[in-house]
Length: 253
Image (cartoon, rainbow, N blue to C red; front, side, top):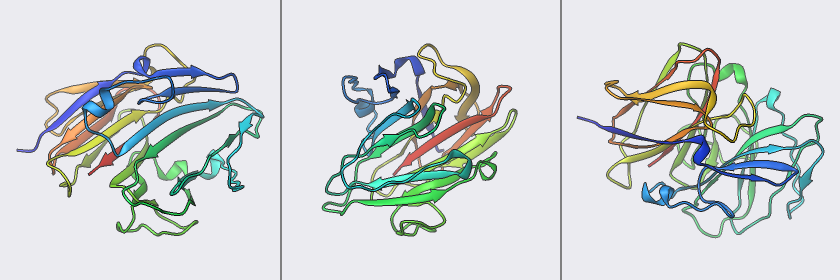
């Protein structure tokens, strides 16, 4: 019988830094915030999950002169394969605060040249289903091109799914049988869309459980959860609140 273990990581346990031009939550160890929790659960392919808010007309600059303008309404996502190394930038050209996730993965291929990938995933295509936005190079539907349809390619055994889940709706995900270890690992995060909040998770609400629904874990905005699953285990995610919830799930083989 397949099993799924879910360990919550609450929003108010994240690192929190206010740099003036930006406010950042660090889910895992980053800069001055250090925690052993992430390494304890063995999710080492996923290195960083930061939730950033960048103030209007502020920035810092990267080193190789590449400029991309990303717009939420057009469904832009950017993936950077740092390869031998870059210094990246963020700039908010708009009059409103920009809210984004910054995610780092550990590469399994050495000496790659830096590369950029742009994809478009419209909000209307994300409602009440999982949309695969990043997947390993060579996976089905993945093209190693700067601009293309389908997921961005990553040189790491890591797949990123996103959804906009409507109230009272539920979606399912079956964890694949891992190629490299005895169990699959994952991390689910509820994006803090209702506004900056350094306290307990608030806003939208979901429950996550194994397919048998014997134990349900409630997550609010900013909350996340580690998951360890046998191949074939089913995850059930249900929106139990009264507002649409934006969720990201990262599956690691």
